[in-house]
Each structure stands twice: as structure tokens, then as C-alpha cells.
Length: 151
Length: 101
Image (cartoon, rainbow over all chains, first blue to last red; front, side):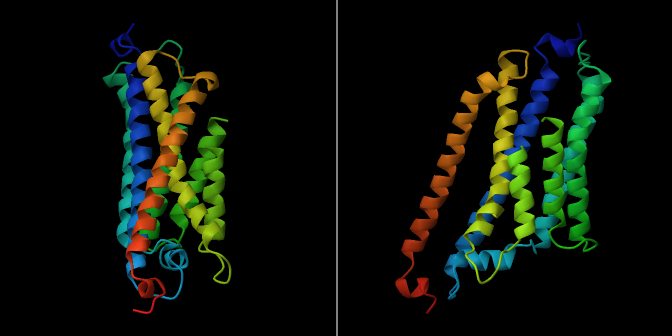
């Protein structure tokens, strides 16, 4: 048995931990951003309701900083995940589980690739090469792909 | 995962909603996406915690209890945000709420 398997499949454990932490952090940062934006809108005087003003101002996303940060973080995290899956498991951790075929790794790469697509699409939206809402549409595609893979 | 994908798709299709209609549904769909991401992250953390104790990916049987706990966590988080927003709203003067200042 190889060193990666000695402590109970360490690569699997770390990989799922990293993905879980990233998804939680990404979702919580978006929720936090929504709360901050609503708080700012509540301070400004207007006849329209807060939710209506929020939707008018932030859907679709207009902030270049948010688009840039989101696209870089999603794309970067996906690239890291793909590199980890391809190289980390094979060479760094020597996690050559006897039950893991090449399809095990291909499945995980296929789950990560749509998120790389999300990052790339977000970057193109940030550069105004694609219309508004492209990042969220790509995210929907990635989530459908993930659901399809693990259905 | 499918539910998150469905709400995200619906949110993209609905967008900002119709200005003549209630903004509640488009807003809830908008918020459902990051909530779904948190939910999925919690699921991956569940798998990682489970792998820490054993060597198998958790099956649906023993994942349900952890899912319920994660759901409660998300619920409490949403509750805290709602409490915070209501307190902020109450702190404003009535004329500010009506947009007269």
C-alpha cells in the first residue's frame, strides 16, 4: 500500500475538505455581499421597497470588481482542484488506490471542469466580451453538470 | 445539487423580475444560489468528516442526520440575517422608512 493510503485515504479527505470549504466560503461571501448591499440601500432614501431597489441595482451583476474577484477565485480554485486531482493524487500523495481506475479521476476532473468554465465565462463577462448574467448562467450549467454526474 | 441547479437556472431566467410585480420571488431565487453553494459545501465537509472517521463515502442512510444538522445551521444563519435586517429597519426613523428624508 502506498503512503497516501496509510492514514485512511488522506487525499480524498483533504480534497473533499478543500472543496467543501471553498463552496461554503464562496456562498457565504455572496450572502454577506447581499446583506451589505441591502444595508446600504436601507440607508438611502427612496419610495421603492428595498428588495425592488436591490434587484434593480444588482441583478444582473454590474460591479466589475465583484465579477473579476468571482471569476478569478472560481477559475483559480478549479485549476487548483484539477491539478491536485491529476498530479497530487498520482505523484505527491501517491494515492494509488487499487479500486480507483482512470475513470475515478476523469469523473472528478469532469466535475471540476464546468467550474473552470464558470471562471472563464465570468472573466469574459468582466471584460464585456459576453452579456450580463453570463457567469450565473455558466454557474447553472456547472451545477446541472455536477447533479448529472452524481445523480 | 439538482435543486440548487434548478433555482439558479430559474433565477437567471427571472432575473430582476417584473417591476410591476412583487420582488419577493426573484429575490428569494437570487439568494437561493449562494445558499445552495453553502449547502453543497456543507455536504462536501460532511464527506470529509466521514472519511476522517472511516474510509468510505457516506451513504444516504447515515448522511441524512448530518444533512438535517447542516440544514438547521443554514436555517439559523438565515434567521440571524433576518433578525439583523429587521433591527436595522426598526432603527431608522419612520420618515426615513417612507423615503421622505
